[in-house]
Amino acid sequence: DFIEGNTDVLVATTIVENGLDIPNANTIIINEAQNFGLSDLHQLRGRVGRSNRKAFCYLLCPSMHLLAPDA
Image 1 (cartoon, rainbow, N blue to C red):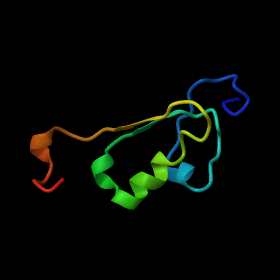
Image 2 (tube, rainbow, N blue to C red):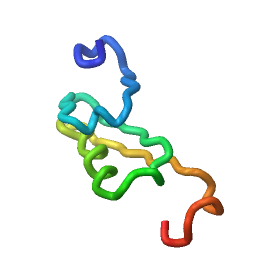
Image 3 (cartoon, rainbow, N blue to C red):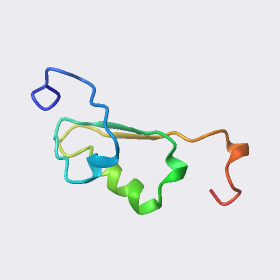
């Protein structure tokens, strides 16, 4: 339904980094982004913005006081 445009939201695990190509997908929200490496985040971000539509990537993480100083 998402690919056909009948549904506006797709909820998925990190399986989306394995070749998902849906040109109309323009937003990705990555929960607990601090648990991913930089290359993983780039791979996930690359799943959106594959058409002429502006794309957005939101990285969610816990409060800054819970992150390491180098995060």
